[in-house]
Amino acid sequence: MYALGLGLGLDPSDPEELTFVYEEGQKVLPTQAVVLAHPGFWMRDLDTGIDWVRLVAGEFDLTLTAPLPPGGTVTGHSKVIDVFDKGEGRGAVVQSQRILTDKESGKEIATIRQSTFCRGDGGFGGPARQQPKPHQVPDRAPDLICELPTSTQGALLYRLSGDLNPLHADPAVAIKAGFPKPILHGLATFGVAGHALLKVLCDYQPERFRRIGARFTAPVFPGEILRTEIWQDEEGVASFQVRCIDRDVVAVGHGYLEYDT
Image (cartoon, rainbow, N blue to C red; front, side, top):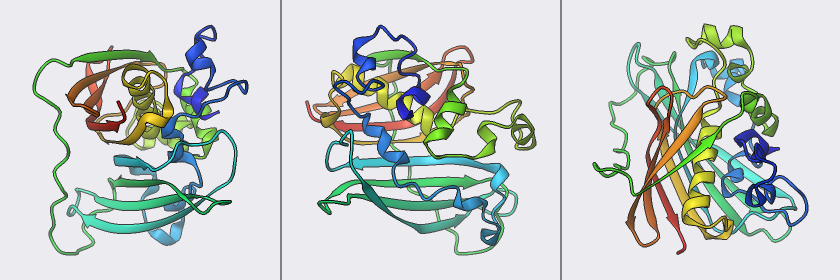
């Protein structure tokens, strides 16, 4: 279901994509770790006091210590690690972390760190601090590109992997949040980028993924074609960004990948 939400299988005759959506010879996309043992949409809980309608994804970092198996049970330990007040009318940033472990062996599988931009929640106080500067992609033409389509049903499919924020399904909620229609999940766009990098740099071998991270810079609408622009920085290290082709907008920037060559 996760892979279908990212658009894999739109061409059912593609043998590489088929291995991620068909049980025969099943492979697992490395970025599927982001939906495993997810704590749910806890920011919608009224006790948090967060304006959940105006939440958007900020930054994301996934470190893999082992390939994801096609079957098994994982546990996740989630916690909030920091909160930044950007000021009255400027919102706030909540940073969280989730560690995934294999339930049977107890071995760590992945560490997930993310920031969520709470657009309606600034001005509560706290010391003035600056967030770390994001990774910078090279100021030159990309070395490689990979264009992948998304499905017009992409957000409706992706939400079945656990992110049930109505912003991605309900037109009324999307309009209230300031968008003309439901947007694709930020982590779905992140997953499309992961698919592109897996295809271009890792020959569809998930075990070669080590770490991937990026910052979300603009919304994506289901059905858009996404171009992942890739720079090969050094052996086993690459930078990337994701561009919505029709609107010529960078939706994911400051991306980095570490992988086995």
